[in-house]
Length: 257
Image (cartoon, rainbow, N blue to C red):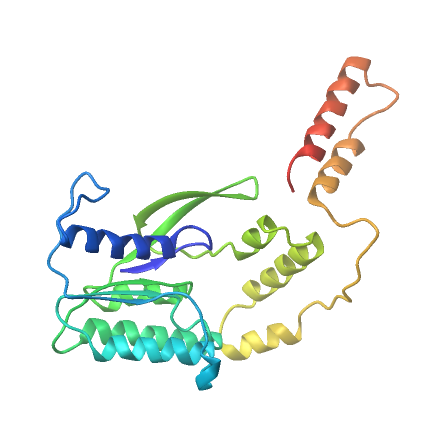
């Protein structure tokens, strides 16, 4: 299973709960499901999280590769393999290439067909389901309402094309100028999406902006208030309607950005 979906949607939680359910079932425990049919698993391999080993001179990416190679070299037919964001510690093209090759290796292994959950932000890997019979695409669904992301916590068939990383940055309290500029850069790169040469050209042609904080941040709520005020005729509006407009403005200001 290739599992895509936005940041914070629950991809890593899905991998962890799968491992725990398999362990609970195998020891004879109840599991949190209406029904579950699980075969015997002899090994649970996980590659989740990011850490380095500075005492041995191993970077975060090196540790990731060492752990991944250990998994690939010790597979069995009854193994459960859980991989989360393989290849994220290097450049985009290197990372996609490594992740793609690992999925192919697991699928085409001459002896062992390990059950695998492969969570990734590399949406390009969805293409593998068209080339390999046992590769299936799933995504952790979300809904976008009024430029806000609602996490549904549901796994459904099909690939996802969006990560909503900028939305998550905004939810974390990132300053508005950073969020707005990131959206501008992403829009420019998506418009120029293509080969590596096109991407390099897109970065070169990126609209430049000398990053300087203004006295008033470019808050989208202020833009909404400004738009509402521009439509009001001060000389003609009745008092009751004026109070309603004022209440609407207060609602916009009180709303979280």
